[in-house]
Length: 367
Ligand code: SF4
Image 1 (spheres, rainbow, N blue to C red):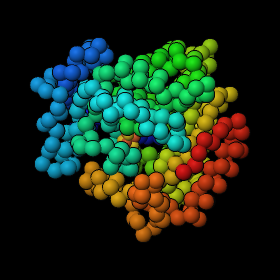
Image 2: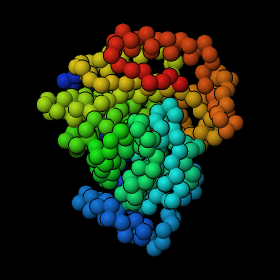
Image 3: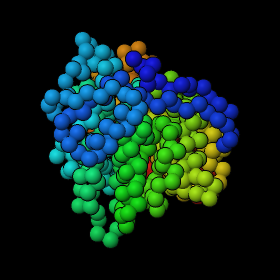
């Protein structure tokens, strides 16, 4: 049931750095399954102890295969999957990393799938099979493998949030903290992660040595309230980012931080709504910090649209091809983006507004 994973509230609290926004309730899966191979891993045992301590029912599967996730309809399969945590070993193919421009040099994965319910979800169409949340039990092997991808004598960056929201499942896995600790020991290697959740207290004291950039994914309130089920409110995400960015002496994490504003949509009165969002960001980060912005306009593909329409059949998300223009990716696939004049207006607004408000921050990319 969605209520088991929904945020306690999406109400917008007053926008001050001190305001207390309601946190997202931690996601508690109704079913936690372990494959036999995952249980043989020390990290799998660590996850087992966590989920048992939370009182969650645990099942060991007979084989290394996930079954029993299909419902009668795709929507039922979605509901079953989003209530299930599967602890499995990452397949060997995951040890062959892919580049992920413009976000980072390489992507790697500590899990696949996400407990939230964003109606524009980036995972739709990119992951195969039911959208069950799979957490990887062979994390030490995944981390050891990263050294092979280090560029000689140059900084190398690794993104860990392409296929999951790593903070959304952190209370169940501890895997994000482990990645941060690992990068804290690596010269010239940098971790990047992004989230729509806000439970960051367990990350504040980690020895990250400035090698992890924590980002919050945020949007204007008409988008976040309508389309981002199961996440923390934007105000709560900004409060979490504030904690991560505050210097250690002030009780914060002292991390480099960032905002991913995505997916940007030209809804009615969009300038006003995005101005409010930037006001909220400015209020939450009212101190000097190492800050970046990433700006991503809304896009979809024929496959992602089809998948999203089965997951969210009543969604009001605009995916009308007639009002878009097409772009081709490097493999020849089509994606639908806003027309050039709309993109230009949006981009100019953000570049101008961010330069005025955050003169020391870097805009990493607009897309
Ligand atoms: Fe998808 Fe990200 Fe939303 Fe999770 S938080 S449902 S991965 S868009």
